[in-house]
Image 1: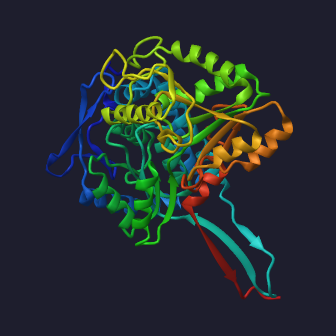
Image 2 (image 1 turned 60 degrees about the vertical axis):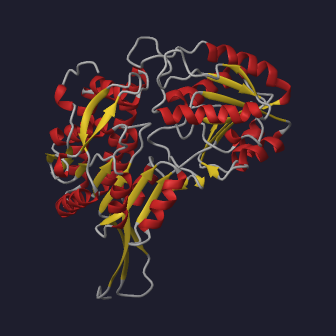
Image 3 (image 1 turned 120 degrees about the vertical axis):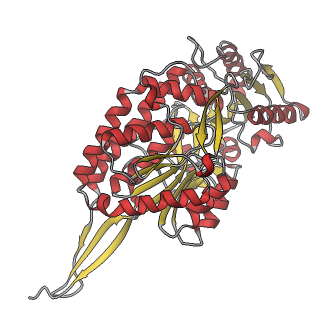
Length: 487
């Protein structure tokens, strides 16, 4: 990878209790650049027992951190945010090297991730209680919100900074301490965040990062340890269900941001130029590797052919390459398994009658690069109608009318994000209300922001990240009845 301006941001050990620690027996795993296949670093490989020690460190740091004023915590968090932005270029380089997304996109994620720290630093000052009108003379009814305790978090590889800060920032702002396990594909960004938290003066044990290639062992430690009172996970629905079951053993509060199967509906009264831009933003950001990207593009019969033609032209112009190179719009997929999945879904669709119009094959660059693809005439019987593609494949479906579009869009167990384009104001309200999704973009293909609640319904998860709602799950509500007040 290219030389960092600040080489000390490239950390290879775990950050626990304010110290950089190797794993037991100095166990390590390799982190590779998906664009080149070359190893970037050998990183400490924590096991379940070592993770339990990190939990104990977080628990030991909890009382002092919880007892600080919200303003004091906010000042330290803002210093952390400022350091992140001061090192935006280096963090973007780290991200592109270990995750593969184009450098400009990585830089944008750094700023996006920092925005959650800024937002929740301020929200921590606004965790309000209540005074409820009393039910009897001489008594007062009070409601407090207090930090829930130690937070365990497992984050994914596709947004290796933003998914960390979306969880850690509200936890720290509420007065909790946190233990973060980043994805084994992308631990370097999380470790760099820990280095900057240390420089910002975040006290030892408040923010801990335990890299590991032993998902089952670390996940079990976080979900079953009695001192972890809140668990938060972003990843697949199948793994989320398992972790949720494990959390039941200690009745933890759980937040889950799980799989998606986002419909992107284009009605015949849509602004086609805007809809095309929206598809390109939603579908091809991060090479299609986002949980809220357009998985099923539903286009009304009357405009289907014109829309497909224009979209094909845009997709064919996408520049694929190493994210560190100038002008690259699409990087590699994260692993060979990701490429295999895309190929499997395309083969299934074409075997059942769908037609590839653009792309459809591994890229000439080799490795995990794949051609940006447009496949037409996809139907509900094909696997990509039910599974997340998680790759640069735009799948076009036809629909007849509004009722048909809503039925097709809701025909999934998932309910994370949905999008639709229409210039009919009445339709904007009707369809928004009818779609069974936690987030809906109307004439917008990009909806993530720190001041809005991010999360899904059905089997796409529990809880919300971002907005003032995002801090609530990191608190407990306490009712206090104060007697003996007198007349």
